[in-house]
Picture 1 (cartoon, helix red, strand yellow):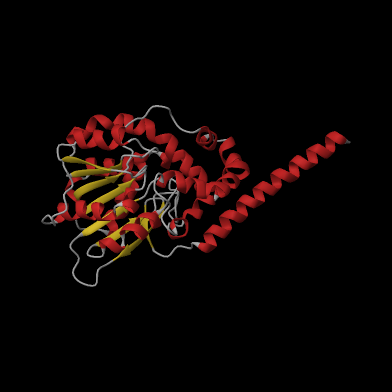
Picture 2: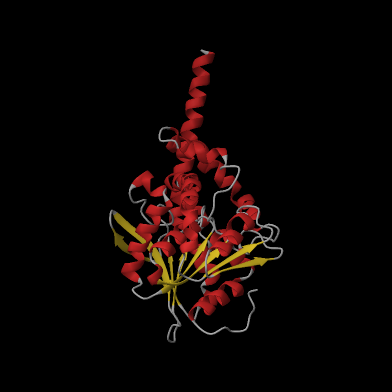
Length: 321
């Protein structure tokens, strides 16, 4: 009897966790519905939002977000300071409101780059400056390598570009496995993440405080959908091998590259990634921000905007050296 009672308790707990995960995802979806547009690509569609200036635009800027995020983080932060540009912010496949096109295979940053570029070609026929944060740097550098004629320049924000020591956190491994991944996401990943959003935000902003309203303005709760949580882990797990293979190509980059990073970034090493690609890219520059962590676009949006301005027009006088 005791054993049966214990089994029943375990079943009820697991069922409760699964229902809680579904509820968290549904609540996040209701709180942050799609507010942009959709573009059709092979196998599905991508979600994006754009802003346009009231006067003539100086150019076009395309934003690609990192892990555990979506289009809203970069757009909410940089959009106001980029009011003199047409700005297009995309949800990477499986994040925000973009379809996870091709399923698990879409974890590969190369595939993401191809499908993102397909969407960009449909909505942005003109040349543009590409801005990417964190994990989005892997796909963004692939786009810059494969389509230099389409870019005016590449701005990398604490971006992942090179292999790193230490691997990835254990829970990402569990989220990737085909059999355990969906179960782990429902029973452990999403419930745990819901309790750790504040702590996670503190870690990426450290040593500075979290930007006011970051979780809400960045629509970060959309990560609490089981399918999105698992896609995020898959993306992280696939990136190391991808950048290891892509790294030798960086000396062939044919566009200006500005790599901006915080000197206190404990998430993505500024030396392993930003300094390295700035050194390897023929037109590369490295900007190291003192006292800044993994969110340089929140800490110094004016530096990001100045880098973009210099790629499309005359210098405005703010030094980036």
